[in-house]
Length: 484
Image (cartoon, rainbow, N blue to C red):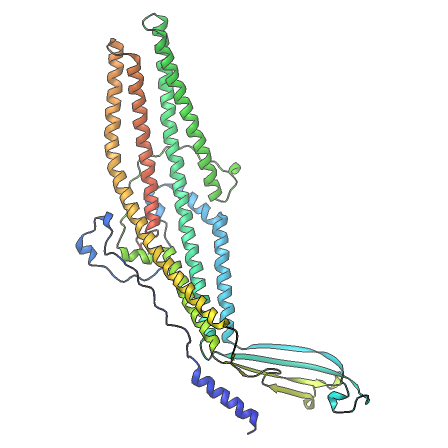
């Protein structure tokens, strides 16, 4: 056995002994403080005891959660947004990019093979052939066809770490896509309910304008009959103009919201319009679930956790630079001075080992570059750990906010209904007393204005409650029934 064969055998034995040695730290998900229940959910102690360790489920669909509102128009809008929203298409393209990068990293596990062919013409100097300067030298033409292969044995897990990092990046990209999709669905629903709320306000003001127009006619007739003074007419006209102005302001808000919804649907505003349909009272019954399940459902939490895993894997890739790299190369083919003899068996040629350089390499001094790369990878990991924990804290805050908003808005709606009833009663009494002459027309206007204020507040609460429900669903990560 010649020396080269001994070298190959030694390299192979070294690869077997060291293969699988990982230079990076074993990944463990960073600990976060998870409460056993949501404060605003009113969860019982028995439910809290059912806490289980969370497992991210970022690959799961968030479901058609908006179906709880039983609105066919909203269903259609969500389908349009999913098909045509440009931000969502960009996110889908980023997912494909990340998966392609993962495939690129995985290719490092396999040898590269290439083929080359072509002639070369060369004139060697006399000195290169061991002759005296000025000695005659010949010019040669060589024809070559060659198959080459190269493979880096992953002795210390550098390639494996890069594959792990790229895989985590791809999973993070998928989770970010789901997060953006959930955000888009929530934006569509909230903008839709905003438009419906403005429709309800506009309907309220249109009815107010109609009633105040009739009132102005009656007041004008009484003034012409000499029963009242011109002051009451002026006040009635002021109230009517004020209602018309408010109606125009609501119409402006609705157009702006409609333009925003068109953009979410991937359409120019000029090509989209939504029929008028006032918002009714939306039933809201959304179980928040256990805090641990939040870590399973929130795609932004899953994305932050995958970023942390990728950063941990890159620590291993950076550490691997301290260890030797074993690269196995070889080439075989044919070489001849005549094209006609190129594929003759006697023209065969081969090369085992690198043409230049060495099979086994270990950097000795690099001015601190490797150490800096490892420190940078560690710092990035620490950054992602902090970002992950902050994302979890923010998620818990958003759920608590959503639960509080839904609960208090429900209670506030009931109280507001009472306020509307009493304001309407006061307005009816003021009309009777005005006709009897016991109060001035200013009292009638004030009572009428108060009815409008209270009814508009009630409509706004209905809209706020619907949008708060959407925000809560988004906060808990979409549909809460994974088996449904």
